[in-house]
Amino acid sequence: MTPDRSRLRDGACPCLSGEPYDDCCGRFHRGDADAATAEQLMRSRYSAFVVLDPEYLLQTWHVSARPDAMDLDADMEWRRLDILSTTGGGPLDTAGTVEFAAHYRADGERGVQRELSRFVRENKRWYYVDGDVR
Image (spheres, helix red, strand yellow):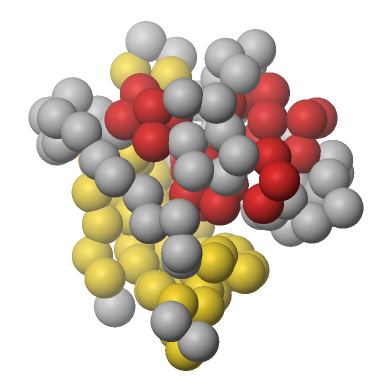
């Protein structure tokens, strides 16, 4: 499945890095690069929700917790990602956490998903393990 780039606003990356999608999270979604940090992986996973790319989400989910499949809700409109805090998760770390708030609109209502996500780095690649919704 090809990501739905029509969901991008002005070609800007949904992770709000200020970079164009193709140069930011798009390169991870295409498989041109791997995220160097847990936060970068978190941002790319958020962007995958925005552009409806379940394959990327599954590929970056640690095998110990990865579901067999996932369906994304095309009616869910992800609006903004705020990174609230990080621990570890650097290029030389093997674990890290990212706390975030993802703002969305669904069925005409606004909401925020807050989560403390856990990541591990294996064979020089970061993976999402799980998270605690707050």
